[in-house]
Amino acid sequence: MKSIFLIGAVFLSITLHAQTKYNIKGKVSNTSKAVMAVLSYPPDDKGGEYRADTATVKSGKFEFKGAIARPQLAELNLIEPRPEGAGRRRDSEADNMKNVGLFYLDGNIKVTFDTAGKASYAGGGKEQQSWRAYDKLTSRKMKEQSDKMGGMEFFAETISEFVSTHPDSYVSVDLMDLFTQSSINPELVEPMYNSLSKRMQQSEKVLGWIGKLEQAKIAVSGTVLAPEFTLNDVDGNPVSLASYRGGYVLVDFWASWCGPCRAENPNLVAAYEKYKDKNFTVLAVSLDTKKDLWLKAIEEDKLPWTQVCDFKANKSEVSIMYDISSIPANVLVDPNGFIVGKDLREKALHDKLEQLLAN
Image (cartoon, rainbow, N blue to C red; front, side, top):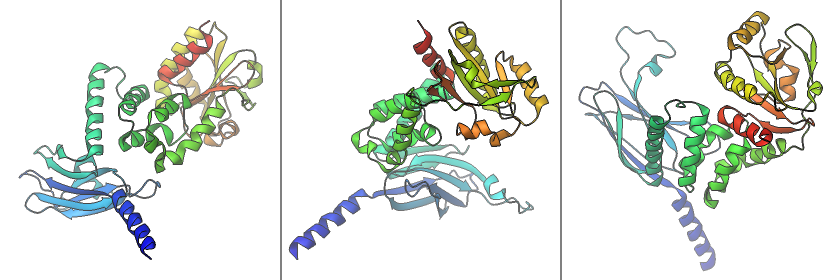
């Protein structure tokens, strides 16, 4: 009986130790009209609905206490009364969430909102300190790389640097969501994964996508044949992927209505111009539904390569064949028809082409 009691006591101790306690004390300015604070956060790493806790603002103060399985990034919104005479619109409550705070539920934290509604933070545990370190890193890199600010390349560089310097942080794992929740680029994600501590590599969130990383590595290993297809070009002539054998071809999925696709086009044009004489070209597959808008975008963006389309949008057989869930997306096919790259954009595209075609 003693041994059973001991085992139970040890198990209880481990369970309690795994819980992260938090105590959030908030303060608003004397001019604030906030009457309630709403704290939203994921209760676990299973990808379910966020939990939303509320606290009444009394004499300019509010407080949240609780425990969570592991530190999670929370969003705090201050709610002001609905203006007199305002209609009962579905989004009226969201319109009143004017003051927002972002921090990790981790230890004792003080959140203070100034007269402009800007939040400042004091205290917190390891993960909150890591989150503040990421904020400082982002601010520094924005000043250094203002030309890249906001683009995927900027976030890839910034988050990669952060992960390498904070390998045992849940903040690193959470930031990697940007690159692991849809299609995974293994050349970007694998180095980040290798930088993580063993503890983080075994965390629930990472174990949830590690299988996708392994599949993505196989997909671009040069051992998987690109699915063959034939679609009509702008003049109605059939064009097959097979006709591109013998050279490297980037199959680019885009559409005239896709803002990020249009923003990436200048980078794609630059890569095409640099490597078009080195056995490289582009074959664009449009997910447009209206030919006039498709042709107009081709002319406006000055896209010199062959364009094909079946005007079926996301029901296009080719997009289904290539498992395209969002655009922009692309697949790099080698001279023998094997896939050697996926979702290569901005600097990553140039780096890959340099690696393959420099000689």
